[in-house]
Length: 118
Image (cartoon, rainbow, N blue to C red):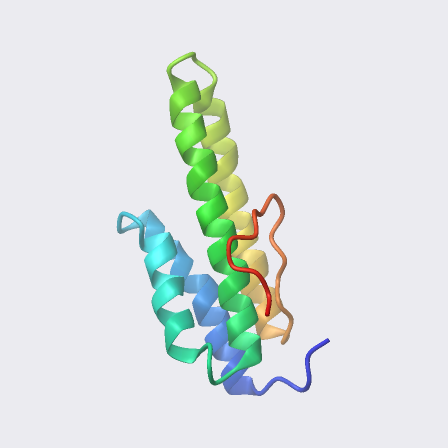
């Protein structure tokens, strides 16, 4: 799928995934962190471009799921979904970081493709 990926590209791909953890500290940081890094390097590296698209698609999908869970919170079941989404987000982000360090693009589960591959 990908030609050889340089160490620099692997590191930047890992950073794209890792930057999404900013969402635990800063509102919308899980989207803004990867977005900024992706916009910086997407033209220079196909690998970083794919990592960024993958990460942003998942984080935007997750935002929609969190909003839906917030609405379901009103009927008493949203709390469970919010916990599951939090665990899914953290675990998938770690898996994405591991895959990027190996030179592979991580394909998140339950992702809506907002940013399609070229």
